[in-house]
Length: 133
Image (cartoon, rainbow, N blue to C red; front, side, top):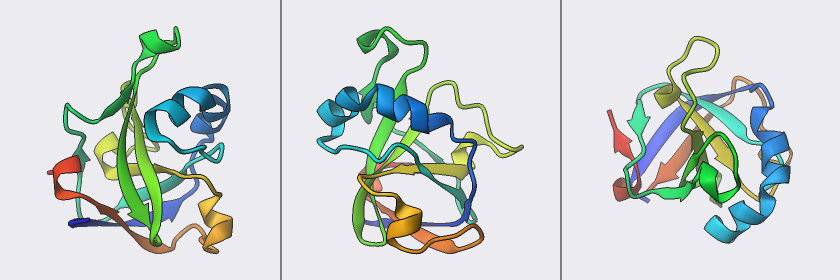
């Protein structure tokens, strides 16, 4: 992992949790991981980022849905995880989508690492997996 993205943990809108349950088999097929139904929202302090075109994709046509999802592997607190981004993400709470990381893994990160809103955390990503702005 070459790039460290620093950000503040904040409460999200729980949009991903229902879809993660519903599309669990697709996420397992794409990542090899059974995701906990929910993501950890990290609002970046120092960077914005873009996903490369060759990232892992769950296309809406695969599950007959309306929104495709991009995924890139990362590490948070030393744990393997994925950053998820829907194609329809146009920003949350006034922030551009490039400032927000939605982190998914096989445990509830808040409980596993005693994380809370306001905590500053680093997310590690391979240099070729993300495009910093």
